[in-house]
Image (cartoon, rainbow, N blue to C red; front, side, top):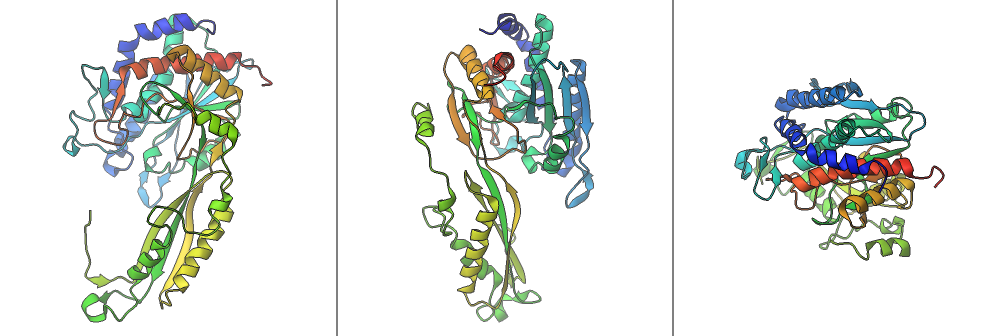
Length: 428
């Protein structure tokens, strides 16, 4: 066991009621980033986090991100950044999380009020944001507080980056991270994120790879104005028909991508990676009776090593244009890349993962699963993903919950990880 972990663990157990109360206060704030009317609550959640961090002695800033694109009347919620400790002789770890949540209403099918933390007889804590991502974010605050109350020296310098638009595309965060990479975050030796989930309910996992995602739009333009479907239907080239035809050529009935050359870009699975997986526990509305002048369809491609965006883009654009040409339509087609997020993969042998693995074994008594997942995050240094929630937590769904065990033991895991980080050899 890393030194000083025993008193830290004991303090976490002694503070569990206070930590659960902290989560209860956070869940009570409906910080729904996708709903304009809740923007004030998203900002209120940022202020709550900032206040809690300041009370713990951290240096805290709420950085504005400007106006929301397409909604110039609406300010983006701030990014809450913080520093706890500034010892040049210690490693510096940057932790990321988000304080916004998905929409939730009792009438959606919730058994409890979604913004009231409710604990059942099996110690399951129900509430929107409990597992995604307020519980994990507050876990870092709990770690700081437990060290202070236990009188245990904090093992690293901690940087925090908590955003409020993750559930709505992380608007503005890419540019912010790029700007602060040489500013507030310049000292970061590694990154740890707790915004994913165990594969099951008993065995934690560490994520060492993420897929990227390229988002595309296709527009098909026809007549200069909408036409009456009864008069012109069947004689005019309807943009919607062309768009459906093109979109239908992207994948087959089994979901296989039909764009030639795409799969040739995918890096083969290595024998070493296969060995890691061997023991894994595992409405239709607003119908129109008109032929629209222009229609737009959107699709995305999840990318993996070694699918580089320029190569994927060329294959997509060439294929879509070729399929449209086969229709001999008088309409006009445009296809473009909306946004791309690069895939990421790290070595599970890096010291950051070694520290996280030791922490999992210390707290949960089992070796973690090493996994790759979908999605992407706008942080480019060496990651370690240390999940707190489990696969049954229903993130984004009704009756979202976080098990009390995962919250308290997860706090121990985050703290133990920091201690093992401090012990890892610099040159490894």
